[in-house]
Image 1 (tube, rainbow, N blue to C red):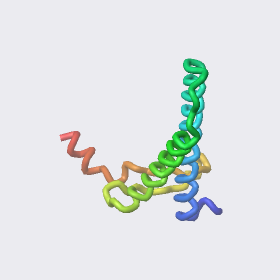
Image 2 (image 1 turned 30 degrees about the horizontal axis):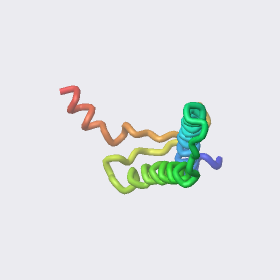
Image 3 (image 1 turned 90 degrees about the vertical axis):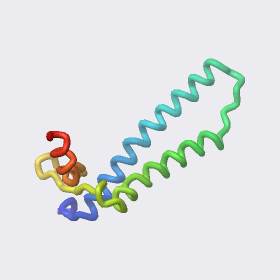
Image 4 (image 1 turned 60 degrees about the vertical axis):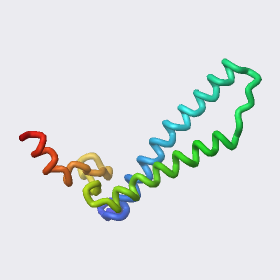
Amino acid sequence: GMFNSYLVCVVWEILYTILQKMSIFLVLLLSTSRTVAIVKPFYKMRIRTVMGCVVGYLIILLLIPFLQFLIPPLRGEYKYSWDGAYCYYNFEMKFEHAVNLVMV
């Protein structure tokens, strides 16, 4: 199927993770702005500050998978789970030597 492709699996997992983290961030930002509006009712929220936070966080979220691709020890494997019917990122594959070092 479509998810058996490595490229589709990578794009699916990155987009899903970014959307999940972005939705959590936006809810946190909304609740923070509402709290400020309750505590200081006449305080004007600057839209540039809010949009700067959103764009900055989005850049960080896009930068993380890019850096994981560039730095070999951070690379994992994207795989398709036939049992759960989803793609996942297997990060533990490259750190077997680190686990063995901790066990010693």
